Length: 353
Image 1 (cartoon, rainbow, N blue to C red):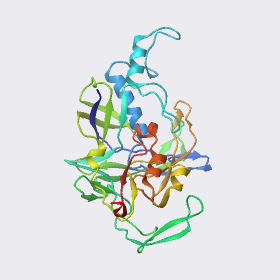
Image 2: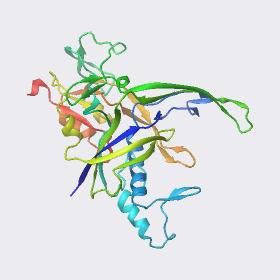
Image 3: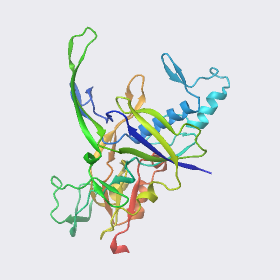
């Protein structure tokens, strides 16, 4: 029997969720460092997974704090350790991979993260809000290959078209700024000899809740959690503090938001999480209204090594298709969906109703 919990994360201080590009030099800016960085709106699902694993180990007494860090104590290489076995069964082993499944222990499933404000819950609204179909033409498109039925929308301009970003289960529309205010910090980091460092100048934009807004997600486990219902956790590039609370629930993400996106003339998918999209998925699309972003994960935190770059479509992106089943098959990757990536709602068009 599985157990599903609603987990909420209330910021206790300004938070900064880092994307791929923050401060410092990288392969795209080898000569100079970035001095300005803005927090992403949401933490990555992989960050939620890491935070959850660590909290589980701490709450169950498997993780030991040492002067030089924290780790799961064992009896040594080649020797049996009950503590080590318990930790593996609880939180699994191995780092998350975009390409392969990993052992997550008792963690069965994470939903995409969303915003909770009072009794209302908000997820990404479809970015095609207000768009009206004008015509369909057989033409070459910028994704996929060859010619296909391209869609032409009334008064569509990719540079000017704007929409509300979030929609509640009661179909109330809000922007991110209605939940979290931007906080700008400007400063100088000194070197060890207290001299100003050219790479030490920075401007950082963080966020903090306007009123009662906080983050939430559903998590399903193979066994009931044995920990305090309210704990303090760290999350984000600055290791900001969040109050984590959990409550066992019968419903989940899909049931909560299944009715929020309107039926239109054509069939489409609305992405409610970052989504890895393959060439096969591109081929199944007639039109894509969305934005692509890049992600890389740490493969060795101690030495700062990162994985190769992956390109994901952002939440709220809309994929129009003439074959929902084909597109669903291309996107439905279980090892990604397990941690809250590649989640979407399939919406059958009026033409097929």
